[in-house]
Length: 84
Image 1 (cartoon, rainbow, N blue to C red):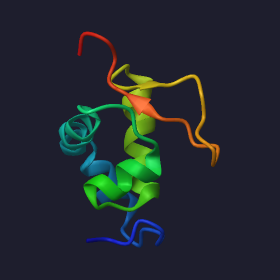
Image 2 (cartoon, rainbow, N blue to C red; image 1 turned 90 degrees about the horizontal axis):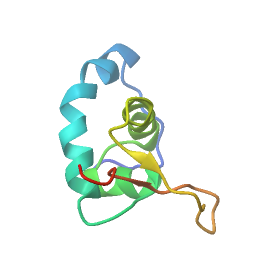
Image 3 (spheres, rainbow, N blue to C red; image 1 turned 90 degrees about the vertical axis):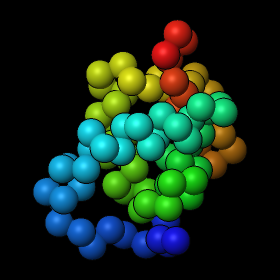
Image 4 (cartoon, rainbow, N blue to C red; image 1 turned 60 degrees about the vertical axis):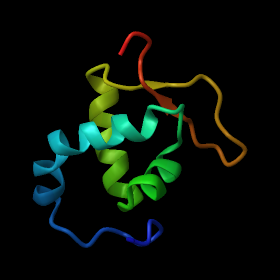
């Protein structure tokens, strides 16, 4: 499993190419409830900076929603929109 605290050394173009594939993986991880980016990264075994990129794209287009309250560490959880 990938260390989620380690910065991604991959070319950003590779991360961008995987975005559409990762939507299904992230949605599956969120099926049981909201998760923060670090929790998602741990759940799917990918670096947090890559997960952040994918989640922000998904948020922009309404595939995930940001919850109104941050956790104790200041991270906002993300969830699937109602009816998704």
